[in-house]
Length: 294
Length: 316
Image (cartoon, rainbow over all chains, first blue to last red; front, top):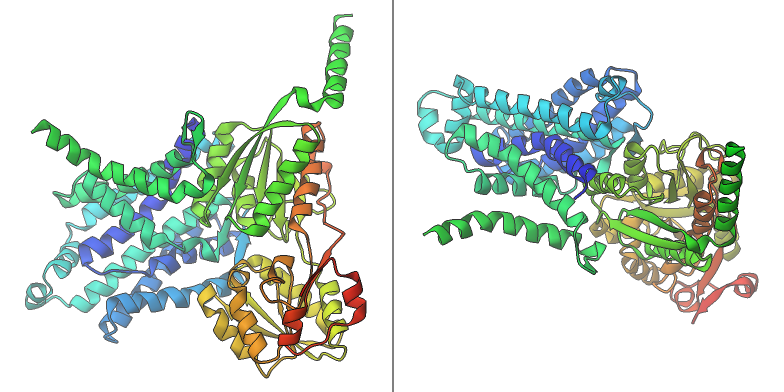
Protein backbone atom coordinates (compact mmCIF):
# COMPACT_ATOMS: atom_id res chain seq x y z
CA UNK A 1 0.00 0.00 0.00
CA UNK A 2 1.37 3.41 -0.95
CA UNK A 3 1.32 6.39 1.40
CA UNK A 4 -1.45 8.03 -0.66
CA UNK A 5 -3.60 4.92 -0.52
CA UNK A 6 -3.02 4.67 3.24
CA UNK A 7 -3.82 8.31 3.96
CA UNK A 8 -6.81 8.03 1.62
CA UNK A 9 -8.13 5.08 3.61
CA UNK A 10 -7.57 6.98 6.86
CA UNK A 11 -9.43 10.05 5.64
CA UNK A 12 -12.32 7.96 4.31
CA UNK A 13 -12.35 5.93 7.51
CA UNK A 14 -12.63 9.11 9.58
CA UNK A 15 -15.12 10.80 7.24
CA UNK A 16 -17.37 7.73 7.18
CA UNK A 17 -16.59 7.24 10.87
CA UNK A 18 -19.25 9.78 11.80
CA UNK A 19 -21.74 7.75 9.80
CA UNK A 20 -20.64 4.61 11.65
CA UNK A 21 -21.10 6.38 14.99
CA UNK A 22 -24.63 7.24 13.87
CA UNK A 23 -25.34 3.64 12.88
CA UNK A 24 -23.88 2.44 16.19
CA UNK A 25 -26.24 4.77 18.06
CA UNK A 26 -29.39 3.36 16.45
CA UNK A 27 -28.37 -0.23 15.78
CA UNK A 28 -26.64 -1.03 19.06
CA UNK A 29 -27.81 1.51 21.62
CA UNK A 30 -31.41 2.18 20.61
CA UNK A 31 -31.87 -1.30 19.12
CA UNK A 32 -33.51 0.40 16.15
CA UNK A 33 -32.47 -0.94 12.70
CA UNK A 34 -32.40 2.32 10.77
CA UNK A 35 -32.09 2.36 6.98
CA UNK A 36 -32.71 6.12 6.80
CA UNK A 37 -28.92 6.50 6.56
CA UNK A 38 -28.88 5.54 2.86
CA UNK A 39 -30.89 8.72 2.30
CA UNK A 40 -29.53 10.99 5.01
CA UNK A 41 -25.91 10.63 3.89
CA UNK A 42 -26.64 12.13 0.43
CA UNK A 43 -29.04 14.56 2.17
CA UNK A 44 -26.15 16.02 4.14
CA UNK A 45 -24.08 16.15 0.95
CA UNK A 46 -26.86 17.84 -1.01
CA UNK A 47 -27.54 20.47 1.65
CA UNK A 48 -23.86 21.23 2.05
CA UNK A 49 -23.25 21.40 -1.73
CA UNK A 50 -26.20 23.73 -2.34
CA UNK A 51 -25.19 25.94 0.59
CA UNK A 52 -21.61 26.25 -0.65
CA UNK A 53 -22.78 26.99 -4.20
CA UNK A 54 -24.97 29.76 -2.77
CA UNK A 55 -21.87 31.30 -1.18
CA UNK A 56 -22.34 30.09 2.40
CA UNK A 57 -19.19 29.27 4.38
CA UNK A 58 -18.31 25.55 4.08
CA UNK A 59 -18.13 25.15 7.87
CA UNK A 60 -21.59 26.69 8.31
CA UNK A 61 -22.83 24.31 5.59
CA UNK A 62 -21.80 21.43 7.88
CA UNK A 63 -24.15 22.74 10.54
CA UNK A 64 -26.99 23.01 8.01
CA UNK A 65 -26.34 19.41 6.95
CA UNK A 66 -26.36 18.37 10.60
CA UNK A 67 -29.75 20.01 11.10
CA UNK A 68 -31.20 18.49 7.93
CA UNK A 69 -30.07 15.02 8.99
CA UNK A 70 -31.60 15.53 12.43
CA UNK A 71 -34.97 16.37 10.87
CA UNK A 72 -34.79 13.34 8.56
CA UNK A 73 -34.10 11.07 11.53
CA UNK A 74 -36.92 12.67 13.49
CA UNK A 75 -39.32 11.87 10.64
CA UNK A 76 -38.36 8.20 10.88
CA UNK A 77 -38.77 8.35 14.65
CA UNK A 78 -42.20 9.99 14.42
CA UNK A 79 -43.39 7.52 11.78
CA UNK A 80 -42.35 4.72 14.11
CA UNK A 81 -43.65 6.03 17.44
CA UNK A 82 -46.62 8.23 16.62
CA UNK A 83 -47.87 6.47 13.48
CA UNK A 84 -47.02 3.00 14.83
CA UNK A 85 -45.17 1.93 11.67
CA UNK A 86 -42.60 -0.83 12.23
CA UNK A 87 -39.12 0.74 12.71
CA UNK A 88 -37.62 -1.01 9.67
CA UNK A 89 -40.43 0.11 7.36
CA UNK A 90 -40.51 3.62 8.82
CA UNK A 91 -36.83 4.05 8.02
CA UNK A 92 -37.24 2.60 4.52
CA UNK A 93 -40.08 5.04 3.82
CA UNK A 94 -37.95 8.01 4.88
CA UNK A 95 -35.02 6.66 2.88
CA UNK A 96 -36.95 6.37 -0.40
CA UNK A 97 -38.64 9.74 0.14
CA UNK A 98 -35.23 11.33 0.67
CA UNK A 99 -34.15 10.19 -2.81
CA UNK A 100 -36.69 12.54 -4.40
CA UNK A 101 -36.10 15.24 -1.81
CA UNK A 102 -32.36 15.16 -2.42
CA UNK A 103 -32.87 15.67 -6.16
CA UNK A 104 -35.27 18.54 -5.32
CA UNK A 105 -32.70 20.15 -3.05
CA UNK A 106 -29.96 20.02 -5.67
CA UNK A 107 -32.27 20.53 -8.64
CA UNK A 108 -30.40 17.72 -10.37
CA UNK A 109 -28.95 14.33 -9.41
CA UNK A 110 -25.30 15.38 -9.27
CA UNK A 111 -23.89 18.67 -8.08
CA UNK A 112 -20.25 19.49 -8.57
CA UNK A 113 -18.09 21.28 -6.01
CA UNK A 114 -14.91 21.25 -8.09
CA UNK A 115 -13.31 24.67 -7.85
CA UNK A 116 -15.64 25.75 -5.00
CA UNK A 117 -14.45 26.52 -1.48
CA UNK A 118 -14.46 23.63 1.00
CA UNK A 119 -13.67 22.99 4.66
CA UNK A 120 -10.16 21.97 3.58
CA UNK A 121 -9.27 25.39 2.12
CA UNK A 122 -7.76 26.85 5.34
CA UNK A 123 -5.36 23.89 5.36
CA UNK A 124 -4.41 24.28 1.71
CA UNK A 125 -3.87 28.00 2.32
CA UNK A 126 -1.12 27.02 4.77
CA UNK A 127 0.48 24.93 2.04
CA UNK A 128 -0.58 21.58 3.45
CA UNK A 129 -0.93 18.62 1.11
CA UNK A 130 -4.40 17.11 0.69
CA UNK A 131 -3.11 13.70 1.76
CA UNK A 132 -2.12 15.18 5.15
CA UNK A 133 -4.79 17.83 5.62
CA UNK A 134 -7.82 15.61 5.01
CA UNK A 135 -6.97 12.86 7.55
CA UNK A 136 -6.08 15.50 10.15
CA UNK A 137 -9.28 17.50 9.69
CA UNK A 138 -11.61 14.52 9.43
CA UNK A 139 -9.77 12.76 12.24
CA UNK A 140 -10.20 15.84 14.41
CA UNK A 141 -13.90 16.14 13.67
CA UNK A 142 -14.61 12.45 14.25
CA UNK A 143 -12.62 12.44 17.52
CA UNK A 144 -14.72 15.41 18.63
CA UNK A 145 -17.83 13.39 17.79
CA UNK A 146 -16.47 10.39 19.72
CA UNK A 147 -15.82 12.65 22.73
CA UNK A 148 -19.27 14.17 22.43
CA UNK A 149 -20.97 10.75 22.31
CA UNK A 150 -18.99 9.49 25.32
CA UNK A 151 -20.05 12.52 27.33
CA UNK A 152 -23.60 12.55 25.99
CA UNK A 153 -24.33 8.89 26.73
CA UNK A 154 -23.59 9.56 30.39
CA UNK A 155 -25.96 12.52 30.65
CA UNK A 156 -29.54 12.02 31.77
CA UNK A 157 -30.86 12.07 28.20
CA UNK A 158 -28.11 9.74 27.08
CA UNK A 159 -28.87 7.29 29.85
CA UNK A 160 -32.54 7.43 28.87
CA UNK A 161 -31.55 6.47 25.30
CA UNK A 162 -29.44 3.58 26.60
CA UNK A 163 -32.27 2.42 28.81
CA UNK A 164 -34.85 2.69 26.02
CA UNK A 165 -32.76 0.36 23.90
CA UNK A 166 -32.20 -2.05 26.81
CA UNK A 167 -35.55 -2.28 28.49
CA UNK A 168 -38.43 -0.19 27.26
CA UNK A 169 -40.81 -1.28 30.01
CA UNK A 170 -38.43 -0.43 32.80
CA UNK A 171 -37.69 3.06 31.52
CA UNK A 172 -41.38 3.77 30.87
CA UNK A 173 -42.15 2.88 34.47
CA UNK A 174 -39.48 5.41 35.49
CA UNK A 175 -41.63 8.07 33.89
CA UNK A 176 -39.62 8.62 30.71
CA UNK A 177 -41.48 9.14 27.43
CA UNK A 178 -39.80 6.58 25.18
CA UNK A 179 -41.38 8.10 22.07
CA UNK A 180 -39.48 11.32 22.54
CA UNK A 181 -36.30 9.42 23.34
CA UNK A 182 -36.56 7.39 20.12
CA UNK A 183 -37.35 10.45 17.99
CA UNK A 184 -34.40 12.32 19.47
CA UNK A 185 -32.03 9.34 19.27
CA UNK A 186 -32.76 8.54 15.63
CA UNK A 187 -32.53 12.26 14.85
CA UNK A 188 -29.12 12.51 16.49
CA UNK A 189 -27.92 9.43 14.63
CA UNK A 190 -28.96 10.80 11.25
CA UNK A 191 -27.50 14.20 12.09
CA UNK A 192 -24.11 12.47 12.42
CA UNK A 193 -24.69 10.57 9.17
CA UNK A 194 -25.60 13.76 7.29
CA UNK A 195 -22.53 15.51 8.69
CA UNK A 196 -20.50 12.61 7.37
CA UNK A 197 -22.14 13.00 3.94
CA UNK A 198 -21.36 16.73 3.89
CA UNK A 199 -17.67 16.11 4.64
CA UNK A 200 -17.47 13.33 2.06
CA UNK A 201 -18.99 15.44 -0.71
CA UNK A 202 -16.66 18.34 -0.02
CA UNK A 203 -13.73 15.96 -0.08
CA UNK A 204 -14.73 14.14 -3.27
CA UNK A 205 -15.79 17.26 -5.13
CA UNK A 206 -19.39 16.35 -5.84
CA UNK A 207 -22.67 15.46 -4.19
CA UNK A 208 -24.51 12.64 -5.94
CA UNK A 209 -27.96 11.31 -5.15
CA UNK A 210 -26.63 7.75 -5.49
CA UNK A 211 -23.70 8.19 -3.09
CA UNK A 212 -25.78 6.79 -0.23
CA UNK A 213 -26.33 3.38 -1.78
CA UNK A 214 -24.90 0.74 0.55
CA UNK A 215 -24.26 3.13 3.45
CA UNK A 216 -26.06 0.92 5.95
CA UNK A 217 -24.07 -2.12 4.79
CA UNK A 218 -20.75 -0.33 5.27
CA UNK A 219 -22.01 1.09 8.57
CA UNK A 220 -23.09 -2.26 10.02
CA UNK A 221 -19.93 -3.97 8.81
CA UNK A 222 -17.79 -1.26 10.42
CA UNK A 223 -19.69 -1.43 13.75
CA UNK A 224 -19.28 -5.20 13.94
CA UNK A 225 -15.63 -5.17 12.84
CA UNK A 226 -14.93 -2.60 15.54
CA UNK A 227 -16.69 -4.61 18.23
CA UNK A 228 -14.77 -7.73 17.34
CA UNK A 229 -11.34 -6.15 17.05
CA UNK A 230 -11.52 -3.49 19.78
CA UNK A 231 -14.28 -4.88 22.00
CA UNK A 232 -17.43 -3.39 23.51
CA UNK A 233 -17.08 -3.99 27.22
CA UNK A 234 -17.91 -0.39 28.12
CA UNK A 235 -19.79 2.35 26.30
CA UNK A 236 -16.58 4.35 25.92
CA UNK A 237 -14.79 1.40 24.42
CA UNK A 238 -17.70 0.64 22.08
CA UNK A 239 -17.80 4.20 20.76
CA UNK A 240 -14.08 4.10 19.99
CA UNK A 241 -14.58 0.66 18.46
CA UNK A 242 -17.15 2.03 16.03
CA UNK A 243 -14.68 4.61 14.72
CA UNK A 244 -11.87 2.05 14.57
CA UNK A 245 -14.17 -0.34 12.70
CA UNK A 246 -14.74 2.31 10.05
CA UNK A 247 -11.00 2.79 9.58
CA UNK A 248 -10.30 -0.94 9.41
CA UNK A 249 -13.08 -1.37 6.83
CA UNK A 250 -11.65 1.35 4.56
CA UNK A 251 -8.12 0.04 5.03
CA UNK A 252 -9.35 -3.38 3.89
CA UNK A 253 -10.71 -1.86 0.67
CA UNK A 254 -7.50 0.12 0.08
CA UNK A 255 -5.47 -3.02 0.70
CA UNK A 256 -7.63 -5.04 -1.70
CA UNK A 257 -7.20 -2.33 -4.36
CA UNK A 258 -3.43 -2.54 -4.23
CA UNK A 259 -3.14 -6.27 -3.77
CA UNK A 260 -0.71 -8.06 -6.07
CA UNK A 261 0.74 -11.47 -5.29
CA UNK A 262 3.78 -12.18 -7.44
CA UNK A 263 2.67 -12.37 -11.05
CA UNK A 264 -0.91 -13.03 -10.08
CA UNK A 265 -2.88 -9.94 -9.37
CA UNK A 266 -6.57 -9.93 -8.67
CA UNK A 267 -8.89 -8.90 -11.43
CA UNK A 268 -10.60 -5.56 -10.76
CA UNK A 269 -13.93 -7.34 -10.56
CA UNK A 270 -12.69 -9.32 -7.53
CA UNK A 271 -12.55 -6.19 -5.40
CA UNK A 272 -15.67 -6.81 -3.32
CA UNK A 273 -14.73 -10.46 -2.81
CA UNK A 274 -11.24 -9.58 -1.64
CA UNK A 275 -12.59 -6.88 0.67
CA UNK A 276 -14.99 -9.40 2.19
CA UNK A 277 -12.19 -11.94 2.69
CA UNK A 278 -9.95 -9.35 4.35
CA UNK A 279 -12.73 -8.42 6.75
CA UNK A 280 -13.28 -12.11 7.54
CA UNK A 281 -9.55 -12.38 8.26
CA UNK A 282 -9.63 -9.31 10.51
CA UNK A 283 -12.57 -10.77 12.42
CA UNK A 284 -11.20 -14.27 12.89
CA UNK A 285 -7.53 -13.47 13.59
CA UNK A 286 -8.04 -12.40 17.22
CA UNK A 287 -9.97 -15.60 17.91
CA UNK A 288 -7.36 -17.79 16.24
CA UNK A 289 -4.67 -16.09 18.33
CA UNK A 290 -6.62 -16.74 21.50
CA UNK A 291 -7.03 -20.40 20.63
CA UNK A 292 -3.33 -20.81 19.98
CA UNK A 293 -2.41 -19.29 23.32
CA UNK A 294 -4.50 -21.88 25.12
CA UNK B 1 28.21 25.85 -24.85
CA UNK B 2 27.20 23.50 -22.09
CA UNK B 3 23.60 24.69 -22.34
CA UNK B 4 23.68 24.21 -26.07
CA UNK B 5 24.90 20.64 -25.62
CA UNK B 6 22.18 19.92 -23.13
CA UNK B 7 19.62 21.38 -25.51
CA UNK B 8 20.94 19.30 -28.38
CA UNK B 9 20.84 16.21 -26.18
CA UNK B 10 17.24 16.91 -25.16
CA UNK B 11 16.26 17.46 -28.79
CA UNK B 12 17.84 14.19 -29.86
CA UNK B 13 16.10 12.40 -27.01
CA UNK B 14 12.78 13.98 -27.94
CA UNK B 15 13.23 13.09 -31.59
CA UNK B 16 14.11 9.50 -30.80
CA UNK B 17 11.05 9.29 -28.58
CA UNK B 18 8.86 10.58 -31.38
CA UNK B 19 10.24 8.08 -33.86
CA UNK B 20 10.21 5.07 -31.59
CA UNK B 21 7.71 5.57 -28.83
CA UNK B 22 8.14 1.93 -27.94
CA UNK B 23 11.48 2.49 -26.30
CA UNK B 24 10.11 4.29 -23.29
CA UNK B 25 7.59 2.57 -21.12
CA UNK B 26 4.63 4.40 -19.61
CA UNK B 27 2.19 3.78 -16.81
CA UNK B 28 -1.49 4.52 -17.26
CA UNK B 29 -3.90 4.19 -14.32
CA UNK B 30 -7.57 3.63 -15.07
CA UNK B 31 -10.48 4.54 -12.77
CA UNK B 32 -13.71 3.04 -14.11
CA UNK B 33 -16.99 3.29 -12.22
CA UNK B 34 -18.46 -0.09 -13.10
CA UNK B 35 -17.99 -3.06 -15.44
CA UNK B 36 -20.43 -2.60 -18.27
CA UNK B 37 -20.14 -3.62 -21.97
CA UNK B 38 -20.00 -0.01 -23.23
CA UNK B 39 -17.45 1.14 -20.65
CA UNK B 40 -15.32 -1.97 -21.12
CA UNK B 41 -15.38 -1.32 -24.89
CA UNK B 42 -14.02 2.19 -24.28
CA UNK B 43 -11.14 0.77 -22.28
CA UNK B 44 -10.36 -1.88 -24.88
CA UNK B 45 -10.37 0.68 -27.70
CA UNK B 46 -8.03 2.87 -25.69
CA UNK B 47 -5.59 0.06 -24.98
CA UNK B 48 -5.67 -1.29 -28.56
CA UNK B 49 -4.86 2.12 -30.03
CA UNK B 50 -1.87 2.74 -27.79
CA UNK B 51 -0.62 -0.78 -28.48
CA UNK B 52 -0.89 -0.34 -32.26
CA UNK B 53 0.98 2.93 -31.99
CA UNK B 54 3.86 1.03 -30.42
CA UNK B 55 3.58 2.43 -26.90
CA UNK B 56 4.84 0.19 -24.15
CA UNK B 57 2.20 0.84 -21.50
CA UNK B 58 1.69 -0.76 -18.12
CA UNK B 59 -1.91 -0.47 -16.98
CA UNK B 60 -3.29 -0.29 -13.46
CA UNK B 61 -6.98 -0.92 -13.99
CA UNK B 62 -9.29 -0.13 -11.06
CA UNK B 63 -13.04 -0.61 -11.12
CA UNK B 64 -15.12 0.94 -8.34
CA UNK B 65 -17.89 -1.66 -8.64
CA UNK B 66 -20.49 1.06 -8.75
CA UNK B 67 -19.46 2.53 -5.42
CA UNK B 68 -18.58 6.24 -5.33
CA UNK B 69 -16.65 5.99 -2.05
CA UNK B 70 -14.50 3.26 -3.62
CA UNK B 71 -13.93 5.53 -6.63
CA UNK B 72 -12.50 8.08 -4.21
CA UNK B 73 -10.20 5.54 -2.61
CA UNK B 74 -9.07 4.52 -6.10
CA UNK B 75 -8.22 8.14 -6.91
CA UNK B 76 -5.86 8.19 -3.90
CA UNK B 77 -4.46 4.83 -4.89
CA UNK B 78 -3.69 6.24 -8.35
CA UNK B 79 -1.95 9.24 -6.82
CA UNK B 80 0.45 6.79 -5.18
CA UNK B 81 1.00 4.86 -8.40
CA UNK B 82 2.43 8.03 -9.98
CA UNK B 83 1.30 7.16 -13.51
CA UNK B 84 2.15 9.19 -16.60
CA UNK B 85 -1.54 9.49 -17.43
CA UNK B 86 -4.88 8.81 -15.77
CA UNK B 87 -7.88 7.53 -17.70
CA UNK B 88 -11.19 8.21 -15.91
CA UNK B 89 -14.18 6.43 -17.39
CA UNK B 90 -17.63 7.95 -16.63
CA UNK B 91 -18.65 11.02 -14.63
CA UNK B 92 -18.37 10.01 -10.93
CA UNK B 93 -14.88 8.55 -11.36
CA UNK B 94 -13.81 11.60 -13.37
CA UNK B 95 -14.96 13.86 -10.53
CA UNK B 96 -13.20 11.72 -7.94
CA UNK B 97 -9.92 11.90 -9.90
CA UNK B 98 -10.30 15.61 -10.63
CA UNK B 99 -10.60 16.40 -6.93
CA UNK B 100 -7.45 14.53 -5.91
CA UNK B 101 -5.10 14.44 -8.88
CA UNK B 102 -3.93 17.92 -9.82
CA UNK B 103 -0.52 17.39 -11.42
CA UNK B 104 -0.89 14.27 -13.57
CA UNK B 105 -2.77 14.67 -16.88
CA UNK B 106 -6.24 13.07 -16.76
CA UNK B 107 -8.20 12.00 -19.81
CA UNK B 108 -11.92 11.63 -19.16
CA UNK B 109 -14.13 9.62 -21.44
CA UNK B 110 -17.78 8.56 -21.58
CA UNK B 111 -18.68 11.74 -19.68
CA UNK B 112 -21.85 13.34 -21.03
CA UNK B 113 -21.50 16.88 -19.71
CA UNK B 114 -17.90 17.71 -18.69
CA UNK B 115 -18.65 21.40 -18.13
CA UNK B 116 -21.75 20.76 -16.02
CA UNK B 117 -19.80 18.19 -14.01
CA UNK B 118 -17.23 20.87 -13.22
CA UNK B 119 -14.40 18.95 -14.87
CA UNK B 120 -13.33 21.49 -17.50
CA UNK B 121 -13.73 25.26 -17.91
CA UNK B 122 -15.07 24.88 -21.44
CA UNK B 123 -15.09 22.24 -24.14
CA UNK B 124 -12.74 24.30 -26.34
CA UNK B 125 -10.25 25.24 -23.60
CA UNK B 126 -10.34 22.81 -20.65
CA UNK B 127 -7.84 24.99 -18.77
CA UNK B 128 -6.34 22.40 -16.44
CA UNK B 129 -4.90 18.90 -16.24
CA UNK B 130 -8.10 17.40 -17.68
CA UNK B 131 -9.29 16.86 -21.23
CA UNK B 132 -10.96 13.98 -23.00
CA UNK B 133 -14.16 13.01 -24.77
CA UNK B 134 -17.86 13.44 -24.16
CA UNK B 135 -20.42 10.81 -25.07
CA UNK B 136 -23.35 13.20 -25.38
CA UNK B 137 -25.85 11.35 -27.53
CA UNK B 138 -26.60 12.82 -30.95
CA UNK B 139 -30.21 13.27 -29.79
CA UNK B 140 -31.29 15.39 -32.77
CA UNK B 141 -30.22 12.74 -35.26
CA UNK B 142 -31.83 10.02 -33.14
CA UNK B 143 -35.17 11.84 -33.11
CA UNK B 144 -34.91 12.34 -36.87
CA UNK B 145 -34.39 8.59 -37.25
CA UNK B 146 -37.58 7.94 -35.26
CA UNK B 147 -39.38 10.39 -37.55
CA UNK B 148 -38.21 8.42 -40.56
CA UNK B 149 -40.01 5.40 -39.09
CA UNK B 150 -43.10 7.32 -37.90
CA UNK B 151 -43.32 10.49 -40.03
CA UNK B 152 -46.15 12.22 -38.15
CA UNK B 153 -45.13 11.25 -34.62
CA UNK B 154 -46.66 13.54 -31.99
CA UNK B 155 -45.88 11.82 -28.71
CA UNK B 156 -42.60 10.17 -27.76
CA UNK B 157 -42.02 8.34 -24.48
CA UNK B 158 -38.75 8.19 -22.57
CA UNK B 159 -37.77 6.00 -19.61
CA UNK B 160 -34.83 7.11 -17.46
CA UNK B 161 -33.40 7.06 -13.96
CA UNK B 162 -34.03 10.41 -12.31
CA UNK B 163 -30.80 9.93 -10.35
CA UNK B 164 -28.46 9.70 -13.35
CA UNK B 165 -27.08 13.09 -14.23
CA UNK B 166 -26.22 11.94 -17.77
CA UNK B 167 -29.86 11.10 -18.40
CA UNK B 168 -31.00 14.47 -17.10
CA UNK B 169 -28.65 16.19 -19.58
CA UNK B 170 -30.02 14.05 -22.41
CA UNK B 171 -33.63 14.70 -21.36
CA UNK B 172 -33.05 18.44 -21.54
CA UNK B 173 -31.72 18.17 -25.10
CA UNK B 174 -34.47 15.72 -26.08
CA UNK B 175 -37.16 18.17 -24.98
CA UNK B 176 -35.60 21.02 -26.98
CA UNK B 177 -35.09 18.89 -30.07
CA UNK B 178 -38.60 17.41 -29.87
CA UNK B 179 -40.51 20.63 -29.34
CA UNK B 180 -38.70 22.10 -32.36
CA UNK B 181 -40.17 19.21 -34.34
CA UNK B 182 -43.65 19.40 -32.82
CA UNK B 183 -43.25 16.30 -30.65
CA UNK B 184 -44.39 16.10 -27.02
CA UNK B 185 -42.12 14.11 -24.67
CA UNK B 186 -43.83 11.89 -22.08
CA UNK B 187 -41.54 10.89 -19.21
CA UNK B 188 -41.50 7.77 -17.08
CA UNK B 189 -38.87 7.76 -14.34
CA UNK B 190 -37.40 4.94 -12.31
CA UNK B 191 -35.00 4.90 -9.38
CA UNK B 192 -33.76 1.35 -9.82
CA UNK B 193 -33.96 -1.40 -12.39
CA UNK B 194 -36.87 -3.20 -10.73
CA UNK B 195 -39.20 -0.33 -11.59
CA UNK B 196 -38.59 -0.44 -15.33
CA UNK B 197 -41.43 -2.79 -16.37
CA UNK B 198 -43.95 -0.66 -14.51
CA UNK B 199 -42.54 2.51 -16.08
CA UNK B 200 -42.80 0.99 -19.58
CA UNK B 201 -46.40 -0.04 -18.96
CA UNK B 202 -47.27 3.47 -17.79
CA UNK B 203 -46.38 4.75 -21.27
CA UNK B 204 -48.71 2.32 -23.09
CA UNK B 205 -51.54 4.24 -24.77
CA UNK B 206 -49.89 7.60 -24.11
CA UNK B 207 -47.16 7.54 -26.75
CA UNK B 208 -46.46 6.34 -30.30
CA UNK B 209 -42.89 5.19 -29.66
CA UNK B 210 -40.44 4.81 -26.78
CA UNK B 211 -36.89 6.20 -26.72
CA UNK B 212 -34.40 4.76 -24.25
CA UNK B 213 -31.38 7.01 -23.56
CA UNK B 214 -27.94 5.75 -22.51
CA UNK B 215 -29.18 5.28 -18.96
CA UNK B 216 -27.21 2.62 -17.07
CA UNK B 217 -30.13 1.59 -14.85
CA UNK B 218 -32.70 1.28 -17.62
CA UNK B 219 -30.42 -0.28 -20.23
CA UNK B 220 -29.36 -2.98 -17.78
CA UNK B 221 -32.89 -4.46 -17.98
CA UNK B 222 -33.65 -3.62 -21.59
CA UNK B 223 -35.42 -6.95 -22.21
CA UNK B 224 -38.16 -5.95 -19.77
CA UNK B 225 -39.05 -2.96 -21.96
CA UNK B 226 -38.82 -5.07 -25.13
CA UNK B 227 -41.46 -7.37 -23.72
CA UNK B 228 -43.90 -4.56 -22.90
CA UNK B 229 -43.24 -2.85 -26.26
CA UNK B 230 -43.83 -6.03 -28.27
CA UNK B 231 -47.05 -6.86 -26.39
CA UNK B 232 -48.46 -3.41 -27.09
CA UNK B 233 -47.12 -2.71 -30.61
CA UNK B 234 -45.01 0.18 -29.38
CA UNK B 235 -41.86 0.72 -31.47
CA UNK B 236 -38.81 0.91 -29.22
CA UNK B 237 -35.68 2.91 -30.07
CA UNK B 238 -32.36 2.89 -28.24
CA UNK B 239 -29.39 5.22 -27.99
CA UNK B 240 -26.77 2.45 -27.89
CA UNK B 241 -26.24 -0.29 -30.47
CA UNK B 242 -25.86 -3.06 -27.88
CA UNK B 243 -29.55 -2.70 -27.09
CA UNK B 244 -30.59 -3.60 -30.66
CA UNK B 245 -29.96 -7.36 -30.35
CA UNK B 246 -31.82 -7.07 -27.03
CA UNK B 247 -34.99 -5.88 -28.76
CA UNK B 248 -34.78 -2.26 -29.92
CA UNK B 249 -36.08 -1.68 -33.47
CA UNK B 250 -33.15 0.58 -34.25
CA UNK B 251 -30.37 2.57 -32.66
CA UNK B 252 -28.23 5.33 -34.06
CA UNK B 253 -25.42 5.59 -31.60
CA UNK B 254 -21.92 6.24 -30.52
CA UNK B 255 -19.61 3.29 -30.96
CA UNK B 256 -17.94 3.08 -27.58
CA UNK B 257 -15.01 1.07 -28.90
CA UNK B 258 -14.29 3.80 -31.45
CA UNK B 259 -14.65 6.34 -28.70
CA UNK B 260 -11.98 4.49 -26.73
CA UNK B 261 -9.76 4.52 -29.81
CA UNK B 262 -10.15 8.27 -30.24
CA UNK B 263 -9.35 8.73 -26.53
CA UNK B 264 -6.27 6.57 -27.16
CA UNK B 265 -5.21 8.98 -29.92
CA UNK B 266 -5.50 11.82 -27.42
CA UNK B 267 -3.47 9.81 -24.92
CA UNK B 268 -0.66 9.42 -27.47
CA UNK B 269 -0.57 13.20 -27.86
CA UNK B 270 -0.53 13.74 -24.09
CA UNK B 271 2.27 11.20 -23.58
CA UNK B 272 4.12 13.04 -26.37
CA UNK B 273 3.97 16.21 -24.28
CA UNK B 274 0.76 17.92 -25.41
CA UNK B 275 -0.90 20.13 -22.76
CA UNK B 276 -4.40 19.10 -21.68
CA UNK B 277 -5.23 22.70 -20.77
CA UNK B 278 -5.35 23.70 -24.44
CA UNK B 279 -6.57 20.38 -25.82
CA UNK B 280 -10.28 20.69 -26.74
CA UNK B 281 -12.72 18.07 -25.45
CA UNK B 282 -13.60 15.90 -28.44
CA UNK B 283 -16.82 14.24 -29.58
CA UNK B 284 -17.26 11.24 -31.83
CA UNK B 285 -18.61 12.27 -35.20
CA UNK B 286 -19.30 9.01 -37.04
CA UNK B 287 -22.23 7.04 -35.69
CA UNK B 288 -23.36 3.46 -36.12
CA UNK B 289 -26.85 2.40 -37.15
CA UNK B 290 -28.17 -1.00 -36.09
CA UNK B 291 -31.55 -2.47 -37.10
CA UNK B 292 -33.58 -5.36 -35.70
CA UNK B 293 -36.14 -6.63 -38.24
CA UNK B 294 -37.71 -9.16 -35.88
CA UNK B 295 -38.42 -6.44 -33.32
CA UNK B 296 -39.83 -4.20 -36.05
CA UNK B 297 -42.29 -6.98 -36.98
CA UNK B 298 -43.12 -7.68 -33.30
CA UNK B 299 -43.77 -4.02 -32.60
CA UNK B 300 -45.84 -3.55 -35.76
CA UNK B 301 -43.70 -1.12 -37.68
CA UNK B 302 -42.27 -1.26 -41.21
CA UNK B 303 -38.64 -0.38 -41.84
CA UNK B 304 -38.18 2.35 -44.49
CA UNK B 305 -35.82 1.38 -47.32
CA UNK B 306 -33.78 4.53 -46.76
CA UNK B 307 -32.93 3.33 -43.24
CA UNK B 308 -32.37 -0.27 -44.30
CA UNK B 309 -29.84 0.82 -46.95
CA UNK B 310 -27.55 2.75 -44.62
CA UNK B 311 -27.66 0.34 -41.67
CA UNK B 312 -24.28 -0.88 -40.44
CA UNK B 313 -25.78 -4.07 -39.12
CA UNK B 314 -29.16 -5.74 -39.62
CA UNK B 315 -30.40 -8.35 -37.18
CA UNK B 316 -32.99 -10.67 -38.78
